[in-house]
Amino acid sequence: MQTLMPGNDGSLFDWEKDVHDLMGQMETILIQDPVFTAHAFDPSEIERLQLSPKEIIGLLMGEAKSTLAMIQPYLRPGMRLLEVGGGVGIVYALLRARGFDIVSLEPGSEGFGDRHQAGLRVLELLGIDPGCWLRTGIEDFEPTGTSFDLVFSYFVLEHVPDLDRAFQIMAGVLSPDGVMVHQCPNYTVPFEPHYNVPLVPFKPEWTAAFFPALRRGSVWRDLRFTTVTGIKRLCARNGLRPVFRKGMSATAFKRVLADPVFRRRKPGFVKTARLLRATGMLKMLEHLPPMLDTPMQFTGTKMTAV
Image (tube, rainbow, N blue to C red):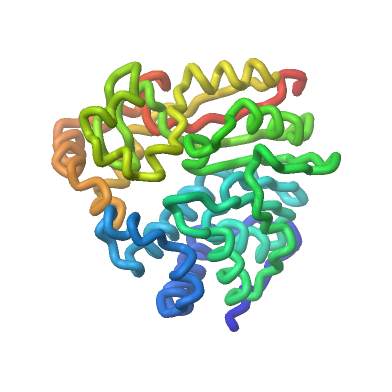
């Protein structure tokens, strides 16, 4: 059994080094672990993505690194953290090992394998306490009076069945001076990033009429078409002030250029990304208004907070 050594309680950390070290451990431990692979990968998704299990592990590591980069500016010693959609437990494992007080919610869902069970296996193999790794969705979370200083998710909100209920609970558990930060698609831009297909503008659910194979995908059937306007509305109803980060499309194109595994998932964007870089237009994308940017990343704070 491998054990990640914790740092000082609640200390900040060099996430690049820690993710690199964890990636090395997981590639060594998990790629040949039948319990993990049986639960982490839905066979239909492996076939659709045309990636090997090792490449998918690399993709999961990349997502964990992106999640940590997203939340790092908000991390402070002694914070209580709530992760909505824990995946296979990588972020939970790393933050728990570094002494952070984190609760992670991972209900598992069709099309993604049983990732809660996969996460339990990760935590077992890495020697991490699974006590706050919970098999529940945010809509069913019962915090019993507990508040959190940071609530976050990474490409999860578009899979949440009841966003109204989710925002109600997230706003309710957020501490008065807390912040929540999320990243998800902005479907105002008519493109679906899971399937790499264009969408019918303003009526994305009609897209399956033109791409019938979508109807066979459980991920498609469960999608909620999140938009900047919809997020603003949900925040307003729950007393939250949203702030959207600019330049997310530019960041995505830069990742296509820099990340070989991500590039394989987005082959149709390679030429476009190179053209944007060569013409200087990639820099211009950094100034797109959030309404026209996808994915979207936003923070939410309570309107009563100073």
